[in-house]
Image (cartoon, rainbow, N blue to C red; front, side, top):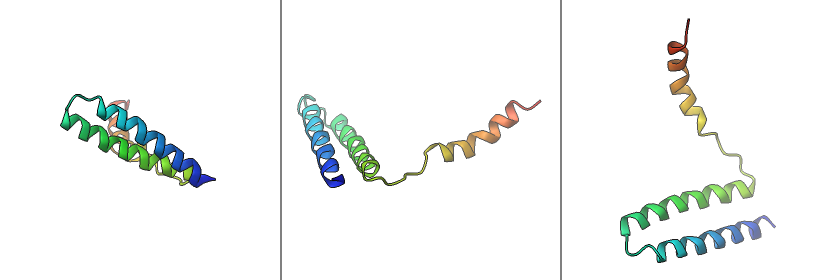
Length: 75
């Protein structure tokens, strides 16, 4: 059942992406950037549908900015 959900998700995403790029009026750089971002979204979405636990993107940011915040707001 998970494979069917992933297939439907990817099919819907491919259809919407095709429509967005087809009506883009020849903007090749923007279309390439859009396609790259949609590919990343497709991979992440398919992994989430499959139940794969992904790491939080906030962890590296927290490691960088938490010491700065503690230094800035220390009393």
